[in-house]
Length: 286
Image: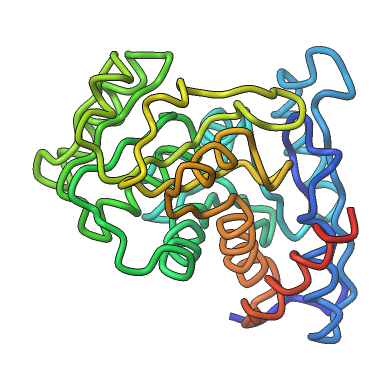
C-alpha cells in the first residue's frame, strides 16, 4: 500500500480531546518520512449537541479531501453505520477508531486492540492471564477484550455500568473464543481472584477525575493496565503502583494505536520506538 500523495490531511473526532498528543505524534512521524501531514482536532465538546453532527462531519471530511480520521469516545460504535465498509478486525470488535478515506469511500478499521497488545507485551511481559477483569465494554473495551483473549486469557470478566452492553460483548466474544468471557454486575465479585485488571472507561481523565473502583479491591498480586493517558498517572494507576502492582500506563496503548493508524493513513511503515520516545518527550514537556 502506498500513500496517495506526499501531502495529507487527517483528523480526530471525539469529545474532550483538546489535550490529545495524537496530532503531534502523527505530524512528527510524517516528517521523518518526508510527508507533509496536518492533523486536525475536531472536538465535539466545543459545540453543544455536536455528537449528533457526526454524519455531517464525515461528509465534510470526504468533501474536504481528508485521507482519514481517528475516532474516539463517544463515537467508536456510532460511526459504524455511517461507513461504506469495515475491516474484518473492526467488524469483529464492533468498534472503529480509524477511518481511511480513499476514492470517496470510507472504510473503518480498529488499531486499538493491536495497539493495546503491543503496549502490554512491552510493559507487562509474562503477565498472568488466568483471570482478567475488564472495566468498560465500550469502543476501547471491545477492542481490548478481543486482544486479551487473543493473547490467551483463560477467563475474562467484563464489568460495565451498562449491564446489557457488557452481556452483549461477552456473548459476541464467546461466539468466537469458546466461552471464556462473562459479564458480571458486581465489581467486587469480578475482582475476587483476578490476576489482572484492565481499565477502559473515561473515569480518571482530566475532565472526569476519580476512581472507577474502590482501592480496597486492588491486590498486590494483580497487574493493572490503564487506558487513560491524560493525565498519565491516574488516581487508579497511582493507587495500584503504591501497593506494589505491576502497571501499564495509558501511554503504551496511545502509541500502539497511533502506529497502526499512521500506517493506514500514509501507507508508510512507522517506527514504534521513535513514536514512543517522542510521545514521552511530549508528556515530559507538559
